[in-house]
Length: 173
Length: 232
Image (cartoon, rainbow over all chains, first blue to last red; front, side, top):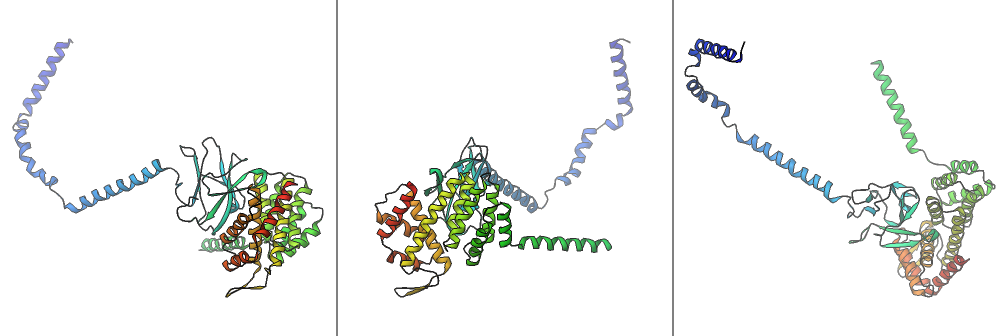
């Protein structure tokens, strides 16, 4: 069968079917338009308050989420907090807080963040007093805290930083 | 139902076990066992010295055990490890406060300082503690004595006197090791008073009393002694 013969056959078949269902197709567009008013019931406005509540809740979630995300992404470690000790040491593999307040045990610090900052929050129940401390970088390298207000010389002329707790107003840790 | 009873019983037993573990206290015997495990040459001396320290409440068994356990982790010869315990034991026999000595020993071990250097440090600081104690005693600052200062009266407790001795000795050591001027007696006295005042265990009345009765020259003499010991 040639292509033009096949095309002719299709056309005839479509014409036959169209003729057979003529009564159904007739005025189809008018009947569709007539039926529309019945369907508007679906689109009738519902009571407004649940929608507003949902919108408000969504806005609140986005707002708070933004705060959280912003804080997480932009602020980095909370080094401005008086109970947080920080050290910038981008090339370190590990940094630990060591001192009188840890009973000279090594407390691993968090980090580094993308700026190479390591940080640790002091225990909540830290007794008021004067504490010597330092940072152990990569297991053996003793580093003092450049943000400390006081320092003392100790073994092998190394320097311990001194933490006065609680800090007086305006002091960094 | 049978299984429920079993589960309840097991839960109770586990809870009791956990509670017992949490409340378990370190005893002097635990400390002596640790000394024994170190194979120290003069175990009896250490037992006598630390026993006095525990009774006098100058050191807690937990603290002594921590020190012993950290020394056990050291690879240094046993004589050097025993030396650390011995210096602190001597201080306990001489009724000196040992907080600073234990602290320095733990610091040195944490930093990986050679035990010879730790021992030297402890011997020097023990001497400073002894000198401060003698100075205070000459001024009537002794445990269980009452001092009258102006209108105030203060009963001197072991904790207050020992902490004052420790802080004054620490101040002198820090001052001299920090390379500051030994000739500046006023600065030395100011440093000592600042250390005393910043420690909340020491009653302010005692801090004021020390300020009143110990002269700058006396503090400067002790600082000079610290410097001389460091030069050796």
